[in-house]
View (cartoon, rainbow, N blue to C red):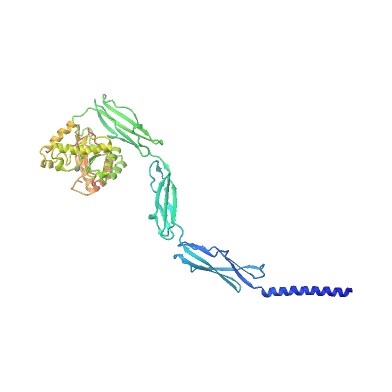
Length: 487
Ligand SMILES: [Zn+2]
């Protein structure tokens, strides 16, 4: 072989090789397609919640070659979710259209509109609110809104357990949600110190003075035994004494009270001169009833103590008698039955009815009352129809038994002549003012079974306080306002 021949062979091989490469490339160019490709990130199905906005999980598109994949350009995608009805459960299609120059591509995703979430429970909380230890939690409020049912607040159930309140609500598709709140416990209130007889009382020279009071704590209950009393009363020396009461609950809240005790000669009978003209005794007959709780709150608001001549006409409200005593009011006997024909039939019948009511009082307060008021007052004449002279005999016997009866010298008119709070207010205040002018204290007759009469009490108290009166509960030594016996 010569050198020339060798060169020719090499040239032929090279040219052939280049030709093959050229053919291959030409082939690739012929078979490569330029196209737009949509990438759904392998998410072909989406679950959307009924009623909530549809959120597309995203999509990308590129312009590229079917063979020359190294060439990429981002393509714009439009999402068409107009078919999806979020207010109707079912299956829908979302369509994606991608464009690059004259090339387009389409892809779809399945969207399932369903309801698999429960109501959204929102808990209200009042700043600084707390629950007293050992007391049930008082609800601060909540709302529950469901994506399917709307407002389902009335379907929320709550349960208190171990310092938490647990809430659950289930929507009509059976989805349940829960929420919980931690209860904040505290005790910031001192015990309620109640002085029986009030903050200013008379004690009688040479007689024993019984100092009675209670301390009820919202947390610890009855802690009367823990009250310390500073000072003492010497009933063998006439004069003014001061007693100071202090009691502290288990969480360190202290309450104090002061009482003035005047040791005076025991009067033959009290004609009102002991009190003077600026004292009002509010008295309420015929309860307790459904307005008594409200009345007690009004009296508490002004720290006014009153007197309740109680009955058993509404036994469901007997618990109010205990409340009356615990809040420092005087509880007295009116009648168990208020049945004139029965209780005025004889003295025995009267005392049977009386004892029945005093047993209820003892059950509620721990002690019997010495104070009472005749049904109809001591001057009633209706008792003549049933037994001549019965009131005179009862009066005599009541002294022997150690009981004191009370009438009134202010009539509110709430027993029949009016049903207006304004008239009650005018009757009471005008008669109190008249008594005062004549140097007398006032014993006011109202009925806590009459809502309009109870509704007048706050204004009466405000009027009294503005005009320099003080309100007191009756004691066995108070002004009796006797009418005079007519049978
Ligand atoms: Zn009555």
